[in-house]
Image (cartoon, rainbow, N blue to C red; front, side):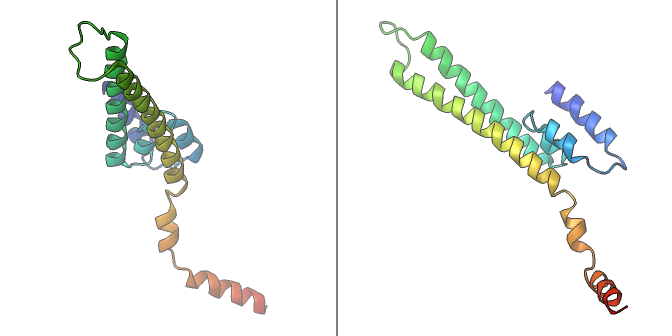
Length: 135
């Protein structure tokens, strides 16, 4: 968590008055949640980091139970095979969340200026083009 806070402060201080660099966003997207911070999507970043941490935690718990499973002295309620299935399921979720985070950060980075473009008046541009055609 401390690592994420330090990176967040570094990104925020570097972005004052600087136009977003899409290539940098692509590099930041390799760490889950960091690309969202670069795109100033704070809630989405916290959500993705939380989901990734939860998936890693559950994967780790199920892997440990699976490795330490003792048939004769089992204090667990599920079979050994079920813990293997749960471990594998959370491993898949770790990968899915990671790739979702990466793709989402890259797409958000490319559409960062979309609102500004859509709010600019299009009528003035068409008038200038028509006037140039008449000359």
